[in-house]
Length: 375
Image (cartoon, rainbow, N blue to C red):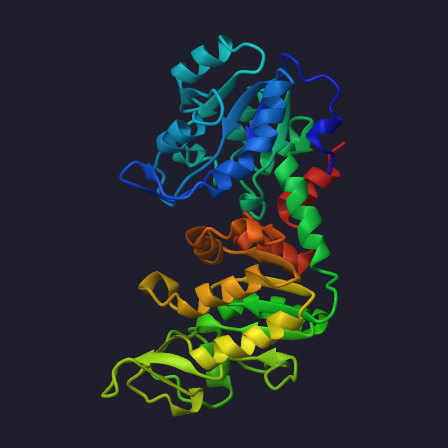
């Protein structure tokens, strides 16, 4: 990929910038500023170079969600103007009045359904706005959408500073120093099976937690009760009994006559639900963390959204103070370290969720491929 810093003269040029600003917002308050802060280096660079920056991003899952709270927070760091919908008259008027170094922020680009559809007419509209395009949205680098993928074929296309950093840092953990540890949590084993197969080969130990572990317990013939598992049971799992594979040795369960308690996976009853890894598992992981030179982690170890955060948060503290090269990613994992205010103690924290997993599995993503093809 070509970096935006390779462009010799940006002064006065319209630059359409796609950033990652998908932060949690509640009643107008921005609850996390992680991605917003990571977007600032590229924004500041373009601002200082005198470019006319057209800032685009998305937020949330519903089209009606607005970037207005993000805009207000952004103004605490850089002078930014509000442009409204990128197809609206307010946008056109404000774009025409821009001076060198100005930043004009568009409303949630997914409010237009043509964004997610990568519709040619919407791509053409975006391309007509600018002289060149910069993608700094690694978190959306696995999405073939108009502002992330389609437009890169219509304008001179470059990577932003944060996107380049993401690629460089994730490539490092694809060639780990030994002893190496890969932690994988969350759910949806059907999409993560190739990733596990790959990293069982690359890493010395792979710990599987969260609902993913339930699937493996079940595949080993253990009772998982009412725990969250994949719709289709796992079949022909090549690593099921691998010496490299680590699973929780104790779990926190709830339901049934015992109520909330800690027990071994072999003791789970049909009316119980596994909700987190137990204290013995946390201690076991700590012994591996202490010796590791590379640690890669994506996904929580319990039902994080239900308040089962202990295994994830205690392990995060252990990883944060280890001497290993530590890289973490995934929404709930990043939210945990953000909550604990220990982000700066990791070697690298990825802004991506699904994009991070895609890159780790394939060494690239559709958006990165597209940017790499551009002259």
